[in-house]
Length: 448
Image (cartoon, rainbow, N blue to C red; front, side, top):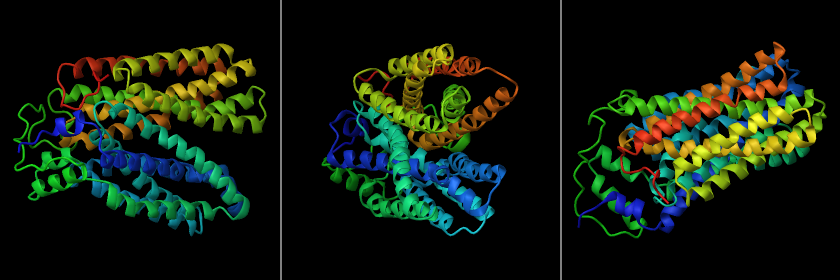
């Protein structure tokens, strides 16, 4: 019997095994949402316990983000050499170990080091999760599944904040890291049982046991066994031996890579400006500190709603159309917010909708990225794009702080950060126009 990957995975209805794999990836990303913000949840308690300065607290908050960026840029691409599944399992072990080590840290530098360890695992994990989700979801549900996974991050952060509040009410700050470490460790057996290796990866790398491994996965998907491997694709734009960073700039992939890096940088810059500065700017305009904290939570709730709505709409609307709509609407909302910022009663609900819109944009960009690359470069492309996005996430809040110190008014800041979303709309259009001419069989651009 001959075997056609796209007909088996992309065109056929999803089996229970495929659904379980996608759901597990979403659950793992929810854990990431908790693990990433564990330091933010515990920072006031750590500062009080160790009598920390603001600079020291900033070091602790930045350590995890630094680790995440390094993991995305340096470790995630290894999945295109050794497989998605091994990197995911190693990442889970790294996150769990880093969280548990954080619980026994005795000073600022030890805690910063353990946060970097956790961040390395989180950064390397996300790219492989997104790729596994993209590869095991059918054409009909691919964009929805990846967008839902992005929503899982915000959902995990929201639930994690609630759990942290309960733990901190009864125990000290170390309990939050113990909970995160043990919960992450508990997911490793589930990943061993239910998380498959990528069929695309096995076909692209062709290990000696490729045929029995593929048949084992097909059996779990309730698909017929195959007698031989299909011939290697002959229409890849990627050179057969081109892997790693070099592969992303081979032929027409160079334009896609430059555009998706710029898209991630721009969208993440706007998102993290909104998430980082909106509560503080509202307090500056007259809101109480408690109201500012509530707004911060509502922004994450808006992110859940926005990403979930995107995932549901993506099963019915072309990804390109939906993503362009989200980017344009979010940019317009930022301009509207700047215009009504002086009226807190109006600005507060608008800010929540902004969080929903921009988070939906990020989910859509996550869904788009795996479609840009062939299997042997897919996780490298995803990991590096996410890493570039994290640079934008760091640069934007810092730049906004400089502008605030320079005397910029609040409306002007929101007008300014609408520009990156409009620029991202242009880069997404360039990507989709190029992608519609040549693809690697995984594009959901024309899926309905």
